[in-house]
Amino acid sequence: MKVTGVRFANQVYYSLDEFYAKSIELHPSLDYVTITNKKKRLLSRVYSDLIMFPLKHRIARKRSWELLGYRDLVVEQVHFGYTIEKNHNGEVYILVHDAIHSKIYHD
Image (cartoon, rainbow, N blue to C red; front, side, top):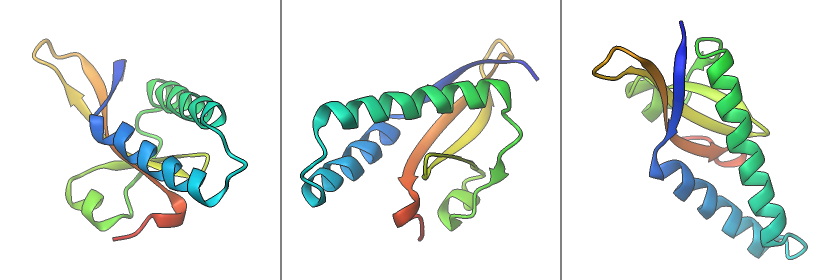
């Protein structure tokens, strides 16, 4: 299967921002530059992993994600819920719907 791209829903950015904002509160040694670089690295890895191996990742264990038919990719302790989609031209792409850190990965 040839994947033409990866799209991130706004919820992914919101979830990462929320988690890392709390992390900065709990760990004052963290700074926004470090967090911004980490988020860039995470999203880059997600993109490359999903382009190369879209079917490799397991069905989500998180109940709400499982009900929605999401697959689960874990990168640096962050879970990304995604589906494989087709556009009106029949091109296959990945839609990443949500993200959550392993420390709070539950329903």
